[in-house]
Length: 263
Image 1 (cartoon, rainbow, N blue to C red):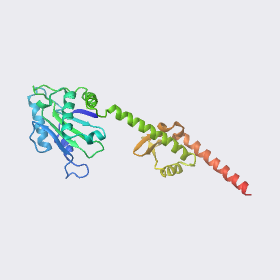
Image 2: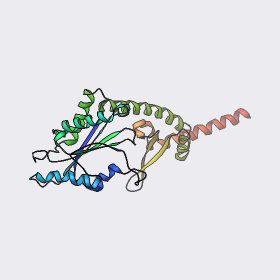
Image 3: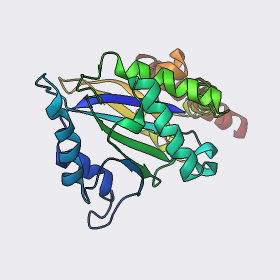
Image 4: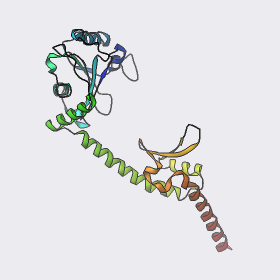
């Protein structure tokens, strides 16, 4: 489970993101999960109510609303019921912000059109007593509380997700090192290298600096993207010309040997 939190100004336009489909803005995105002490029917009305709560606060808050997101990993999101998602949302708010969600206005909405289902939460920066809820280290507290909740409810933790990504990336790097080295062993130019790599589903993409000069290249495969040096320092751009020249010489020698044998 992954958690995010930040204090924001609280614009209606920003909240409209919760409701609008990515591809077709005429369609509604996701569904309402839960709300507390709110009656608004659209993003503008809901945001207005959330910010109204801050009027009891003596401070002139620049960022009036907390924008929070928590995302159960993979299959966790698929198996959790709406009741469980709501409870997790309340725990997430409580542990991250140090408040009682039952005494606080909030709005929760589920987005289920991405790889991992996730829940957006909006709540004011002011508590029941008119005091400002601190946003200091909010993001770090969100990460910590999400990890703690995942442990409590036997859900996949962010550390486990990261470890899986690292292991998967290392497997891909190992595969690419093998395949790219094989392609390079038969390439005689940059364009030849790119063409032969593409036949294996590997994209070779130049990286260009501000002066417009090619300073390196990246290797893309299966939605993953690596610098050439991350795969193998022996295949970085400065070393390719030597590889190509050596292959040209070896090809010429092979041809000459073949001609000699034929004669």
